[in-house]
View 1 (cartoon, one colour):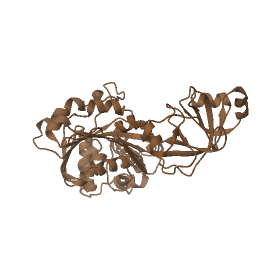
View 2 (cartoon, one colour):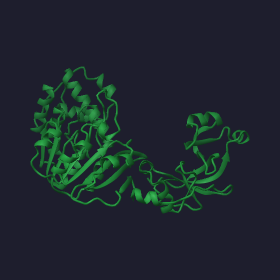
View 3 (cartoon, helix red, strand yellow):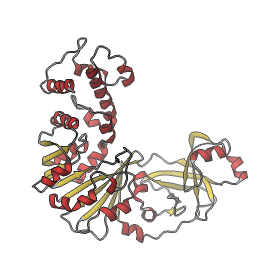
View 4 (spheres, one colour):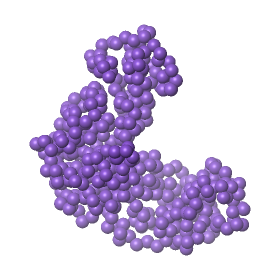
Length: 419
């Protein structure tokens, strides 16, 4: 730790720090940051153990953030922490989305700073920004990194975020919270009340300290149940389900204490190139009927993206895009024409096969990308049963139809994924 702190001082003052050979430590890291970390570890015998650990941490950190937070990876001289904060931090797309929710203001307070990725994007819109973090190493890294990221107006507070909140005497425009989602045994938690801190218990205090609260929660969260727990009766609450690359990254609760609650909260789904918003009341009022697909001829099949699967506007999707559900629980839709703006994957169904013994024999040996939706077997079980080969241009969806029959829809993907 002494060595790393000493190097930070050298780096901040732009003083070369010489190590074995002719390179400074920083030059060595830059020249090897695309190297395989395991192979690099075997080549550091000329360095002390502290030096070697620092080199490997910086190389691995840069490699992990190169794709996750590319704008950070472009900044020379950033320091990277141990692996866990790198794994837990937001990706750049999600961090930019949060920043886009905020119109800026006077004071932002991040009570759970972590690596500071979310903070670094949100803070740019505020004249003052406070980063609170109890981890000493992360605070030290933030002091080095934030000026390099253009955050000279950031104040770094080392300590417990809730203790800081209790003695906080000002009114923040926005408070951001990313509760720790692991229990004492290190297992992941999903329910809001099991996270640290418990945001539900803190709501009265938060209402006294901020006009607006943004809470980042688990991608596994039940959105409907969470709305019952976390939406204060005296504030407007919106939910944002943020996905990227076919995966839900996070669920955000946006609690605006300065506004009266709406008749029904708004749920915003955002994934890569699309946005879709609705209220639970709209979904409840949407009446659609599952119907059987055509027995012959081609038709189009639509699979919602991950953010919509999480938010569950399943009846409303059919209504808004003029589609028909295959089954109430299959969450697959069909129609006679391609709907290019549909937020998810689109397919042209060439034929619908039953799964009787004769039809199973006909399917044997076919090559396809297989998926199951509302179906009693897993992909591996069905592939083995039908003796299907993996890959190729053909896609197969094993699902349950409106009359309860099991079927396999054989398709070709249409264009590129909307997401």
